[in-house]
Image: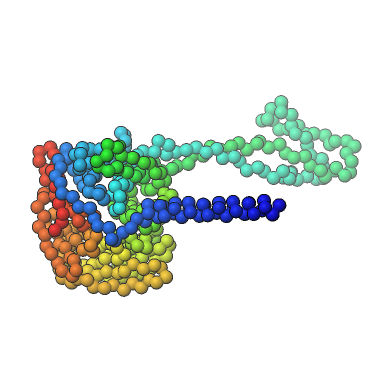
Amino acid sequence: MKRKIRILATWILVSLVLQFSIYSYLESRVAKVLAPPTGNTAPIVKELKATVPGNNLENLQLSYAKDYLAYTENGALKVFNLSSQKVVFEKRPVPGSDKNMGLLHYQWLPDRNTLIYFFAKKNPNPVTTVVVQPSTQPAQQQSKPQNNQPQSTTPNPAEDPNQAPKQQQPVQNTPKSNTNQTVPQAEASPQPIVEKRYGNPQLTELFTLELPDSNENTLPDDRFNRSLDSFPAGGEIQQMVVSTFTNLIYLTVKTNSGLQLMEIDVMKNVRNLHRSGETITNMAASDKYGTLYVESKVGNAKHILALENWKREIVSKNSNDIILGDRSGKLYAGEIKDDKITLIKTLSDTNENDRKFEFKTKWEGSIPFKNSRIIIGAGGEVIVYNTKVAYIVKNGKLKELTLKGEENYISSDGAEIMEINRDGKSTLIELRPLK
């Protein structure tokens, strides 16, 4: 008996050790997927030229590895392989869709060749019918006796219902105990009711498009995630922010009734984070702790806030402060005066328990801000650029760079410049390091 117990205990111990080892391995693998290392990874830089068919390309975006280009052309989403120089993915609006349907928004993830996009189409079943069963009446409901006389019996169903019922004679020899007893009145049985339930006339779907290495002869994996039932019909996605630390997606959505701040988690659950009368003008997510920073305006008051679930904390009360971005555990903010950035400051991300919102000034001067884009580079440089000029602030110094293309885009890591020039029915693309 003791020998059997020892054998059983040994096998239990071996099983626990194996389970713990497997669990630790899987946990480390999941952690690498959900929160890949940031900050010390050098950005990928390529030099190449490519000719993309079509001359009406809009909203051009480079992938993380600089080997794919996403853009829209006449309402269609297209992905172009810069190595093989061919279109490898295309998605057009569903025939019969309304003007504001089809592709709503797309954006590359910052750490892998995966494109997230939102797609809308008509809901074929915006109205559903539901059969509602009537509530049952209490069985004890009875008619009251009149003048202590026995109640009349139920009329014969064969009699004309429009004629007054004939007077019934009292029942003879009725025991005294039954003198006040009544007979339930016959009532029509309540019938089930068919009700209409009105849903969303628009189906809004979330997809992830995973691209292989550009040298592989493998088709992209266009993966449907789920329908967002609470996404407002006709809503316009103005900004999208991805937190790689928490694996959360944040959207600002403009509707006829105002602006919504939506959060989508890894299970694709959706919840609204905005408050009544609030407008979110800009936002950024920490890549270290996942904190969401937003520019919130209510009435004439404008603040920068830090959001952790439902908790809100004021980061800055200066109405001239704007969010520039977040990179490597730092929030970058700028002060705007007369359409110019006059000051750049940073705030180190901390966890919720050790949080102190103390900015440190990194640069002072003057940079034109109107109609400009802003990039926080992988090296902590702040890049403010328009169609012709890029202003780069690094290590407290400002450098001005003239851009040569008809249109110019800087990659999200700040390492690459993409020059765009039209040539007849084609578009010429040139990638080179931003120096």
